[in-house]
Each structure stands twice: as structure tokens, then as C-alpha cells.
Length: 110
Image (cartoon, rainbow, N blue to C red; front, side, top):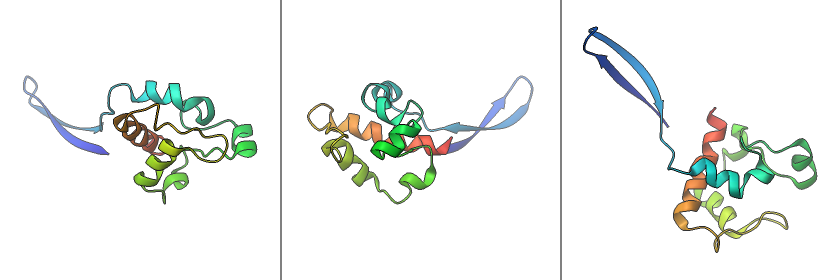
């Protein structure tokens, strides 16, 4: 989520509006890189062959996750999906899973 912040430069007497994006928890990108990027791609876009042969979703396309609530996305990360998506409930903490869900949501906002 983006926030508008008003920055005041006292020395120059200027006011400038700047849009800042919400900060991701430390390590979100690293966690995604270690656990998800090999299939989903570093920027949330899998290779064409991963999309077609394995049905890996493209997180950079807003419509991909538009109707998927966070609870469903958390369940997929926790329990896996199909034969190829592994379950991470025994490998990641609930906080790490929540971090991944939040981070995945950022791909379609670029």
C-alpha cells in the first residue's frame, strides 16, 4: 500500500509530496528467493515452460491473485498444491508464511 508523505525542506521553505511504498519485512525478498523463485521467478513471473507445463501462476499479473484471499494463499504455502508445490508448514514459521503472502502481493503492483 502506498502512502503520501509531505516532506518539508526547512532551509528552502519547500514542500514536496512523495509517494512511499509500504516497507516489506526484512528478508522478504531473500525468503522468496530461497523458497519460491526457482519455480515462480525472482520477480514473480515464471518461465514460459513453467507456466505451460506445470501451471505455475504469474504473480506479476494482477488478475492472477485478484480473487484469491490471503487466507487461501497462506493455505497454499502451508499445505502445498498439486504434486509440484511443496508444503512449507514444517519449514517456515507462520510469520515467514505471512511475509511471503505480503511479498507475493507486491509483484502485481509494480
